[in-house]
Amino acid sequence: MSGVISTFWPAGWRWAHCCAPARAALRCAGPGGRFGLAGAAPVGRLAGMSMDHELQKHYALLLGIGSPWEVKAVALKLAEKRVEIELGWQWGSDAKCPECGRVCSIHDSAPERTWRHLDTMQFITVIRARTPRANCPEHGVKTMTVPWAAPQGRFTLHFERFALEVLLACANVQAGCALLGIGWETGHEIMKRAVARGLERRQLDQLKHLGMDEKSFKRGQSYITLLTDLEQSRVLAVVEDRTREAAGQLWDTLSPEQKAAVEAVAVDMWEPFIQTIQTQVPDADVVHDKFHVSKYLNEAVDKVRRQEHKELLAQGDETLKGSRQLWLYNPQNFSPAQAAEFAALKDLQLKVARAWAAKELFTKFWQYQEAGWARRFFKDWFGWVSRSRLKPMIAVARMLKRHLENLLTYLKHHITNAVTEGLNSKIQSLKSAARGFRNFKNYRTRILFFCGKLDLYPL
Ligand SMILES: [Zn+2]
Image (cartoon, rainbow, N blue to C red; front, side, top):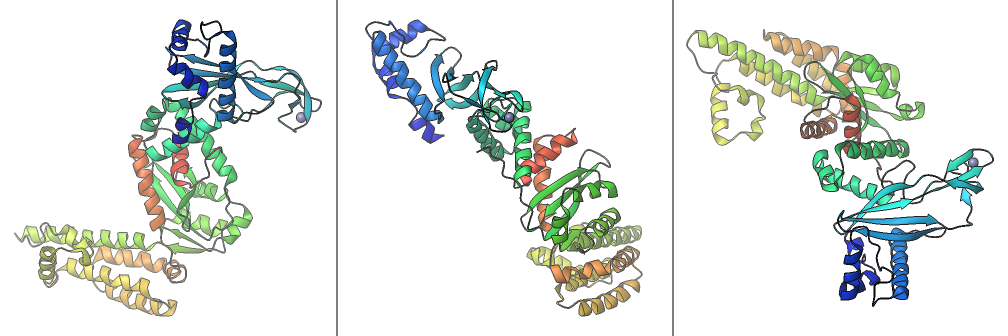
């Protein structure tokens, strides 16, 4: 932007600003007046014409427009705070068919259209033109493409690029649109086009470690499922729901070659996801995410605490009151006071202390280099928990045993869904900024726009 501003004003315009008679001429012209009005004494007709010419030349340079397009006129509409640049096609030049590129004769011109361009200082700047229609022997009469905008686009490519930069920087789309002076719908259309462009250009030849995870959508039991690229921290695809069919659709976005390259997929122990991975990428390892495992263990510890706290309270014992966080935090993050409190609690003969110890011990599982050693460790751990008489812990231990093979794969791939979780929280903030999404398509566009790492720009 700064470059545009610093080199923007053509010599003629500066001259007009310095010269009182010219200023008077402009005032006379009022809203809609052209620069360098002919006949405005003492500037004179010739001076006016050359000023017009200079101005047109400058605008052509600034726009990067060359033959056979030319700037025909520049109108400054002071009251509307608007600059209108009229472009024209030079008479006698041939047109190109937009379908096949063949040089054809001109049939006629399409009706006049306007495109919003980057602002001229505080003035909205608009390009106006009638585009020639080529008469192609093969494709018939077709409106030519213009070098400054995408077909059907209402903005120039420069404006669209700038709009994308603003929207990306804002995260809050409403705020971005307000800065750009465009409506929400228009901002959304720009993002939608950018996502489509980005998906078309996207290269997916190095997919190795992927992640699958669910995310809440609307209130209640409403979900979306994400497929993520763990290596490049990006969302690859989003579908509505978390069923087997929905998860299957995610994989349909990849080609057979891309699927064949996938070595492992980090996923929660959600059966429909596991089944889809086994069917769609049978050669890839399923890796159960260690963060999910520790979430299950933490929940079990908390259940044990709640039960025990209730039993103790019935006897008037308040030992466990306010201790919830202590059993869930990583002891390494304790404050000195918390550490002292926890050390005292840990030594009491409490059920929750045993549950906590089982949870802490399990972290060792992830540190083994060899699957054989990890398997032996798990057997011991499982036996110990089974004998603990702590029902919530036993339930989680059994679940882990059922999925043991897909826990051991972690030792080979060392992948987790931490990346996906990170993207999840980014998505959460998009959702909050938008105050939720009613429409899945809009939600998907927003996710891929901000988290897809796509090449979004038109130029
Ligand atoms: Zn053609």
